[in-house]
Length: 266
Image (cartoon, rainbow, N blue to C red; front, top):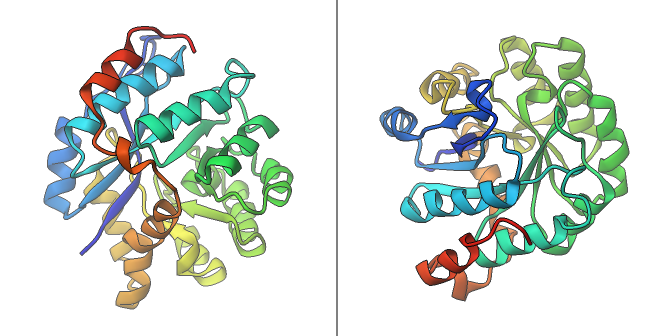
């Protein structure tokens, strides 16, 4: 069975003040994921002061485990303003990445980001950090861009954000939610009931949250097999397959990556 974990951090950060900006090692996560039956994982960098560097380092990790890992770039919409399109062009065309993540605790999405995602036809994973109201700004402005909202809007257990994101998933065809770190189980029940199984993606928020535990939440929903399969991998597969890659670059040639890694600036 195809099971895609759509939310996992990987690689090193450089701030060294918390786990999420220090290191996100994959070895234990991959053992746990394999034991749980997870077949593929979408990974993006740990928090970093230079996402050009972090995305290039992630490309090496993905290249080493192409049978299991799917890369998403990460950008800071304030600090990277003016070069986001070029960063994502490199990530998609040269490294074969399939999407981009932004985190609201750093900077919320901008028009520059959304326009670049639209040009490349890639999904945007937006951790709004509880600020669910901003989805009402970018989702209708870019109806042809797919937005995935991790944690149903809040990793901090903000039930008000969960409520609003579920409503937005119902209202906007281009807004999806991921299940990572949602502690109040009934909001997962509501998300399926109100938005439907086609609008929800399984995620774990690895490597720090156990992927098997997060997967069990989906199992406990007791859904029909077809609905469960959509949440566990079908929806993510559909979104990822919409991304057009340069087929010549899918092999992640070492020579190309080496040349790109020599400098941090674009």
